[in-house]
Length: 161
Image (cartoon, rainbow, N blue to C red; front, side):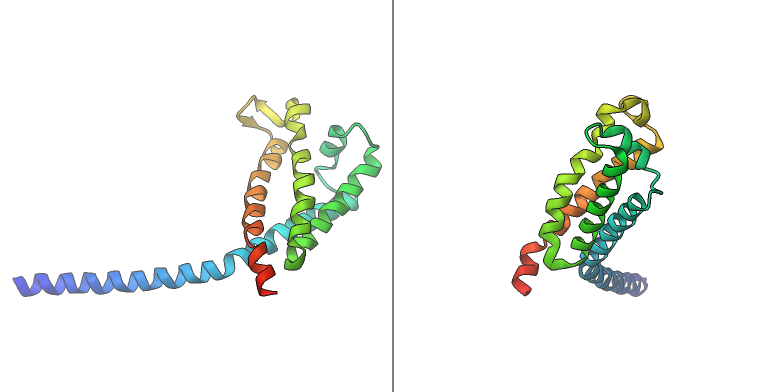
């Protein structure tokens, strides 16, 4: 009986060691590829969303136009689109990450303006029920977190350059 119990423990130990090795391998791959994947994803989102504004086909164009009162929307929305494309390009090219993060830091607060200026467009029930537009705005929290991660790499990139 004791031998069967020891064999079970040995088998369990072997499976735990294999699972641990697989876990270590996967974690190592994620460590290697997470920042480049994040850089590509955030860069692509900015280029894509910005290009839609430049082309005049952004579903967010009307929201932006309704939020900005200082400049004519036919001017401001495409300029914002170009700004976003530049952010995306800078984030994709590591030596320009700092520039991209600066441009992003200047642009991102404006993305939350509709929550204050147009609450009827953003909320179904204030402060927690969000419309599609509200969800579009709140997803910028993920962009902010991604920017923080990319910002944490700039010194490493400078040292390796």
